[in-house]
Image (cartoon, rainbow, N blue to C red):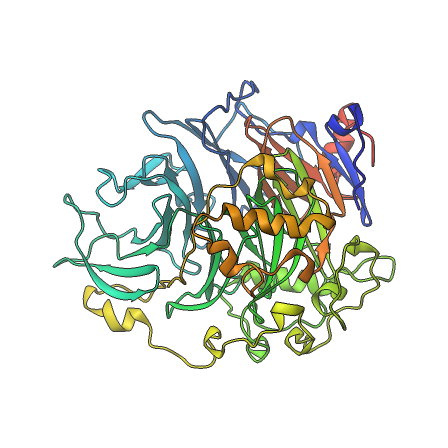
Length: 572
């Protein structure tokens, strides 16, 4: 458990920290930022985001980094722990007027040393396709804002596709695009394809193929982030209405839902094997959700403000004899993994070989960063994932005696569930009980569009915005009942009462409570990025500084070439 000091110690910016595997060190010479290194005035600006792509460069420097700061977008060769960053030579730099870049994603399937297809979303709703290596602008989607006028919150290429990408907006709509199609000069017309409680799915209605191919209208509020499962078959969406929704991507079937303790969900990620999803948001918590059981299995408390990013560390995660598919039931885990997902496959190979050095196995490692300028690392062990008896757990999970997963895994559905979680699970939540017809086959064959995915949504419940001065990190365990009353009273329409204490949102005392393995202040400004790479982890703050932290034993050439510039922070 991370011990919180007081006074000057608590406010000190850490430049290194220790875990059971060793010491992580900040590399000042590997810091990426604007060329003048002047801190960006972040007042009212969109979050700084970072994305990576590997172009398989024969020279060994295949990683490319893209990051946005205010109106600026940068694309560099990423040298990581090998060499110092050269900010004077960006591959591409763009400055936008009238709109701000909000997010970006490169197509890993088509990326080469000569060409990269980079999507950039903007605060005014447009999406731009550029090639930063050729310094070309290929296309601009939603140019006249006829499709959606609200900001782009997240965009990603469809896994395994060279042409299809998915975009979410703060309006609560998601759109599927094809880079080969135009958007048209008039507002698109739609026809209803599918409708459910609090969501609708429409397909574009036109004589010729045009964008968007599909539009989803989802609940109330923005879709803040979405993430594909490692096998590309499922999609997890984190909404401002506080709901996590997980869908079978192709059939538009809802697999399961989860509700935040209160406030909106801001971020979401999958475990490397696809069995668990972690979310973070305005309740200052990280929440672990089981894919196979469709239920919350743990919450983590360590942040003092909103959690902005969550991410799994595939290098520390240890899962033995896991030759299974990344998402689905236990039967699905026995199927051969899709060969298209080379990165996911290599990640699975790595995690099956990594074990702790002291005889105890770490089942999963994930991290989180927040607006409190702190980074937390969490260990999720088998006593949490597969307990023999469910009791209130409030201990550092790294001190638990655990064993690794067996060859066939361990079905936690057979374990006793805590209180309200012992309610029977509806068979309708599992997409494996039947194989519904793809909505592509039923509605979009006439457009000549190749097979792609869509999603459906469960009923969304709106709650009032969470205020920072009601952070549950400051509320003791004994006051959980008072907290429940507070949430219920602030729910407006008492929607919080309908989900609190159910499988969607169990009470605090009904599930294990994790404490962070590491919890360190690493920035003066709110943190917006956390990415785990093979030999380092990358963080970024709203001032526009992208920092590289070398893993234990991975200082490499940079340390030997710059011995006088090594971090001097205290290991805690």
